[in-house]
Amino acid sequence: MPITGTKILFAFTALFLSCVCMGKTIRVRPGNNAIKSAIASATHGDTIIISEGTYYEHDVHVTKKLFIAGEGNVVVDGQRKSEIFVLVANGTVLQGLTIQNTGISSMQDMAAVRIQNAQYVTVRNNKILDNTYGVYVQNGSNCLVKDNIIRSGAVSEQNSGNGVHVWRGEHLRIEGNRIAGHRDGIYLEFVINSTIHRNISEKNLRYGLHFMFSHDDIYSKNVFTRNGSGVAVMFSNRVTMTGNVFKNNWGDAAYGLLLKEITDGTIEGNLFERNTVGVYMEGATRIHTSKNTFQNNGWAMRIQASSSNGSFTENNFISNSFDVATNGTMVMNVFKNNYWDKYDGYDLDKDMIGDIPYYPVSLYAVVTEKVPTAMILYRSFLTDILDKVEKVMPSIIPDQLKDDNPVMKKLRL
Amino acid sequence: MKSSCIVLLLPAIMLLASCTRGYKAIEYSSDGCAHCKMTIVDARYGAEIVTDKGKVYKFDDILCLKQYINENKMEESKLMLFVEKYSAAQNDVTDAKQAVYIRHEHFATPMNGNYAAFVSVEEARPFADSLQSDILTWNDIQ
Image (cartoon, rainbow over all chains, first blue to last red; front, side, top):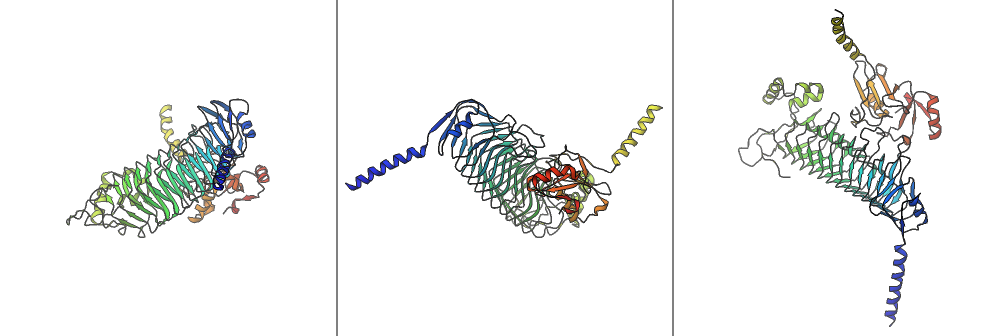
């Protein structure tokens, strides 16, 4: 009998608690400062449902934990005046809205959605259009930015900001977003232990994804196409890059992947296709590059002599104008078991591994590294002769840089 | 006669014009920084070196320019140095050695040099006051 008593008491308590926790639901209809006044009247844990319509509001500060969702086609328009949403409470959710037209200022970074000093904030399924900055995380942790469409039309705008911009963050997840037309698609500065997964970042002015001073992060299965450059990883340690596509990053200072001053990274299972330079490395230490495909690039890889202790194994190099270019000897790096379509050696013992080494740096790659303008003579009769002579009597190319075990057949990756 | 003169003169004038040593406009979001390799996008912090031979190096951050000079041991007296004016349109530059600078985190420049350039102390004063920082000269940058 006392047991059932406790049970009943427990049931009532649970019921009571669930009522309290669910909070009330506030419905918002278009009107003057409708969203702001709904937030003002809400209490911690409430739900705000915004009905279909256009709302002209800016500087909407969400200072308590709320679940804010749009129903139907909800447009929140900042009329180019200022920032739009500023989320400062832990656990806030913002979803299903179209948020557009922040102000433009050279003194302040204007964002459509700013997460400021908060944790466990979710921003998902929004359309974030024509803003200076899309989602701006300023000192956030455990936040989720998911399945948003972030697009800016101002393609040549100098003051344009980044699609997703993070300044100080940890344990963030940025997933499934489509980002286009910003300065950098995703920009991370001082961000640790975070994942960037399945985003599509294209046609951004500078980089699809940009790491600065960010450590222990993973980006995987993203697509970076037609950006100024695909991805830049700079001054960062232990960044893992797997299964991404770097495509059509074409132009004078364009790279698929730009690495500068980074240590202990992994580059695995990526596709580099039709980039001016697939991977550019400068000051990169202990980077392990394996199981990638480099196809139809100008240079598959340009590696500066300041890079050391890297390994390049089991990659496919197909139809690149130059496989590897370097300004030094790169003796500190290991090349092994790669497939090179330019390899013309033989395999007499039929073990599927070439019997003579492959030298991935061609003569002309060395020449153009020193005198870039010599490129106008590339594929001329003269350079063909030079290449042939160099093959017979190697004298200019770094002879230490070689793949001793080039595989005969394209690797299945 | 007259027209043939012009035809002959035109290439000569063009050749002369192309040889003038001086500031070459930075093409934003296309040119890359000679030091950090990033694409130059922010017109407030662009900078440029023109060497005595007329070779042009472009930078996305004033600190990048300074570091490039130091690392390559270039002789500063032989170089023409240009920096973008912070509060002017793009490719509106001034002599870097004559300019004054403010360093503040607020600027968040591409490479975290955080220097902004101004033509005069008078122009820099309101910024220095509101950011509560000092006005620096070229030799202070490092």
